[in-house]
Image 1 (spheres, helix red, strand yellow):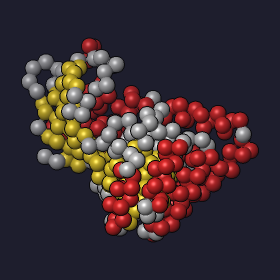
Image 2 (cartoon, helix red, strand yellow):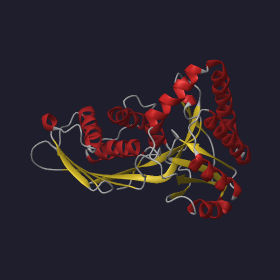
Image 3 (spheres, helix red, strand yellow):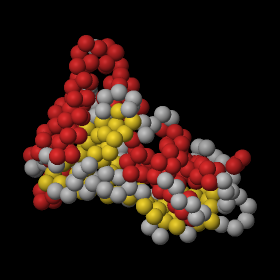
Image 4 (cartoon, one colour):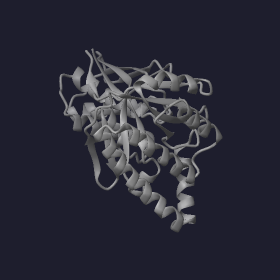
Amino acid sequence: MVKASAPGKVILVGEHFVVENQPAIAAALNLRARVLAEVLSGDFRVEVESKNLSQKAVFQREKANKESPLYPIYYAALMTLEYIGLQKPLKIFIDSEIPPAAGMGSSASVAVATVAATAAELGVKLTLEEVSRLAYQAEVIVHGKPSGIDNTIATFGGAIAYRKSEGFIRLEADFTPVVLILADSGIPRSTGEMVRRVRALKEKYPRIMDPLYHAAGHLAIEAGKAIEKGDWKRLGELMNVNHGLLSAVQVSNRVIEELVYAAREAGALGAKITGAGGGGNIVALTWKEDGGKVADALRKISRKVYVCDVSAEGVRIEG
């Protein structure tokens, strides 16, 4: 029996604009998905149980129910077994701190931890690149054409800059002086709907929107430099500007704006939409000593507030 865990993620700058090949920056959070893998006896099957979803299912190759919310987890385990070349019956148990459907990479974190736990239970040590690649295949089942940001962050931890045409670079940074606070708007988000809305706006007003996209790209590059220098005040300012760009492409609303301004007025260095917008979470960057004050201000208007450190560590075996 082996347990592995992988961190969630937050996009700090660049969401939406990344679709048109502008850079984006994401960081790993110290909220983790934990997966227990255990080899069973008997015929081949994968038993999957999720504590968070209060669901369990048994998957066999030809009888696998692709509509089950647990299917991507089975698929991650199956891909790992096939890659290793062993067909052992398995039990997979998931216990995650990462809220689902909140733009925090929960499905990728579970997939990464599933791959790592499965391989380790079978006595095989995969490279981080192999873990990330196998988890990405499971993410395709969930998201169709994922960017690869989520599985990369969950595998490697820390912070990364990403551009569609160039892939990823790791940012060398020490986030110790700051915390990230996420606050839930309480509005369900639809990533696909938001992406379509922004694309339609870009197609309608290309001469206005193109400069916004280029500005977002320059902003992400400057944000990456600020992170590597530990210039958190500058990063906060750039996050505020990025929020303005996201408001301009119409993915904000009154509830999100109230959260953003509550965080700023309580002393956050910067606050913005994170992820698709239209709902979901906002993220605020604060000095560690101001985290409690900002979180308290957000709790007055948000049901779910998470105070997070950036996790330098990605996927790990826990025993």
